[in-house]
Image 1 (cartoon, one colour):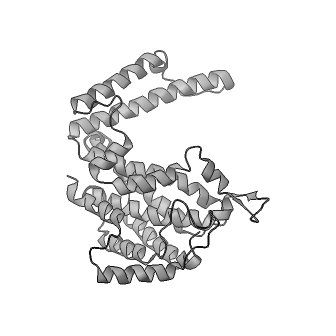
Image 2 (tube, rainbow, N blue to C red):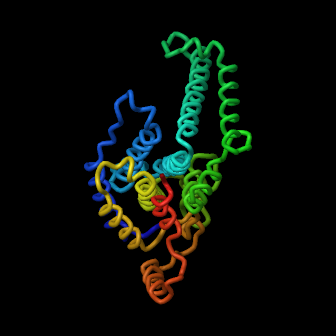
Image 3 (cartoon, one colour):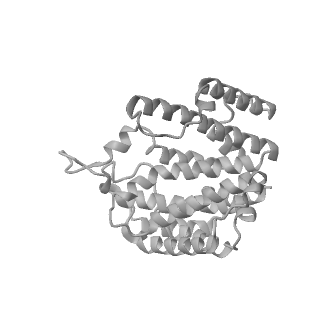
Length: 314
């Protein structure tokens, strides 16, 4: 579990993101113009979510269980960044069509599932039901799937259901982001014995007590650190299109704050493996000294890749 030295860092992160929220309005274009700006509109929604996430990750919360539940939401924010950056680099007509087909697919499946569920469980409750869709849901969903495949093939992608999230991440240069942040957050979305076992703490020989509170500091540190990294990615990718205010000073401050964090949150920690962690304040100082001596020493690949998005996004 990261040491408690991070508290001032969290407070500094919180101050930055509260300032960001005051500067940004997250307002869309008028309805008649939305179709011409679909990617920017979706990016606005995703950025709004990312800012709110970072505020929640860094503020003091009365109920400590909340930090655990931030972790699964980090995956969605990471996927938003990857997919929207990927879409922004496609030919506009293709990107718009993909968004429309994907949205219709989700609505069609949702209506079908909702209708079946309430008919079996609570038939007297009124629910929204588009009979034109639900009446031939299977045919519509199948046609939608075929339309998506045809579109991907017309763009040169011959995978049955289009590129995976990993494919998209590699395409836009977000490999470290996908392989670490997306992977780590996915542990809290899917069934994972390790994620459940690590909730149990107690004497070396047991018995153990399960609680999401036991690694609260870890969950909060992970969300705080990588949430800030993802926000930098959003700013790099969409800063010229979706940020009506100049946030260069805030981005610079976030990067400086990340540099002051002694311990980058890991996937598997010393603590959960019953090993004593090193003195991170010393390893941090050693890292900085080594970087001064050897300018080629690898450091911060994930920061470099999220910042480099600016140069590639049209």
